[in-house]
Length: 334
Image (cartoon, rainbow, N blue to C red):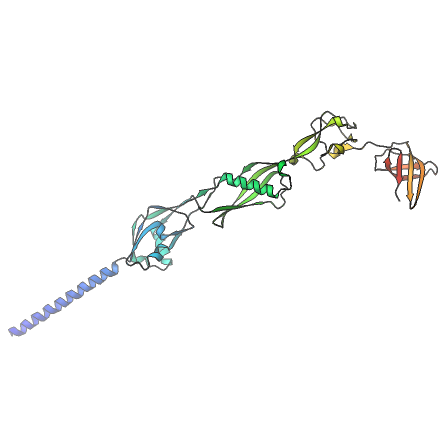
């Protein structure tokens, strides 16, 4: 009986030992399951240069095994703000992005800051380089002689910040640009070959040209002499299409109105004086093939060279139209 009791005691003791061992195994296994696969220590703030924010930019990463460390660190967890701007990214947002990338955030431990301040680095526009590029683009496209042109007041938003990298630009004028006076051009900015911004550039283009101006007051219908005129340089942007550019284009004419000193002459201010007047006797010439017929006529109205006037043939008393060819001469056109 004592032997039987002893066997039961040792049997119970063995079962207790096995139960305790099983409990220890379960405790160890639970602890192993609860251990994080990765530990992320979030930074309070960081500065990035690219469009994408990767996990390594905002956190120090350690994993139990290095086989997936590189993949985890390169995971994109946010979009960077605009150059020179700042945004905040919180832990919960990072968890979501990691889960979307195929990771289990439940097996990760998050330490450090709960919100990361992300700032995008930026570069300022090189104002002198942009201004020089604008002037070069204008001079390469304009129809004017380079020596006659002055480009001034080149203005654009110099406070624009762009991503860091190799900055290039392309300047594009308006389709119907005449390159005179106030001008607007499109400035396209590229960083590392990628388009990043489009700006508008204002510039003033002054193109100087020779023009004929008056040096003294000229009354209406006054004949113009060489001493009345002088050649000056004026900006084409202020000139009309009928501006007189040469002295010989004004000499021999008379004014159609009062003209004051320093006035730029225009063709509308000038008129040829009449070379025939009403009552003048003129020679009428008519070419009829190989034959030339002449007659005498009386002018019925004044006319300038090249104008058509009414002339009465003194022999036939017939009124005809003839073109004034000079003083005392008209020609019939067949």
